[in-house]
Image (cartoon, rainbow, N blue to C red):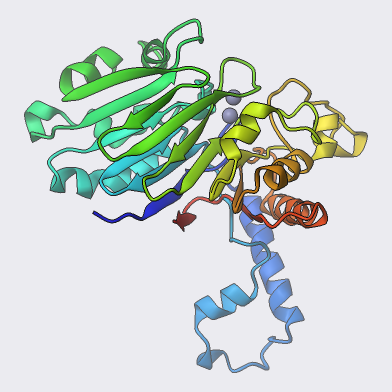
Length: 345
Ligand SMILES: [Zn+2]
Ligand SMILES: [Zn+2]
């Protein structure tokens, strides 16, 4: 068994899925051609000697071609242990990627940790292909372990079943229960810690500030590496991060954090749309930078991008957050989460 911790991002948007439009793609093509011309490559360069990929990479407008449009879903793998943080629409492509492994091992075991049950964190579950594999037909012993809060007026299981209830979805939770080998549920609460499977991964939860009960997760691995996940969290005072957030992020190798808005959007400044977002439960670069510096985080991953943010805007927010960290004397590296990003520890 390898001791490597692998973190892969499958959905990075907040609130609602936001795919690129035809106009977005066209705009990217125009910008690329403009950049190509600006480089003096309009026919003077020997294009036969460089690969198409090299040319495209040289024209990159942002850190990636696109950050992606699927909602929150991050897979953390340690040895045979698969931990899935949230089940937004990114869970669909994640599930597809796991199909070969599911058949090879005659069944998959995964732990799903739910930060909370807003749509953007659960909507991928009905489209997780493995959920529909029938044990009796395929002989697959799939084991799903769901960990969620209890304070949502309904339990996690009732919420997940509710989004599939007739007539909202053609396959009901009861049918899934009948045909899946094993599904188990565990509660989380503020301060709870629990082991995930037999892998030695310790999982700790703290309550965050967000409408409806929401939890941040701190994963501590046997090799002493730490991955913290605190999406959907509002900092009331950007200069004074609250204790649960600092505790979760403390010395994390990777801290995945909500950074949905700019400060101007959060405050509802006229030039940023004029709608204050106080009480909506999301963060912004000034608060993220302060927490990263105080918690002495290695790598900060900006996550839960606003559905209205273009790739260019997200890239600017990444640079802005990095500048703020540097100005505060911090050493954290800031990156923006994108679909397909894989980090290893
Ligand atoms: Zn969300
Ligand atoms: Zn939410």
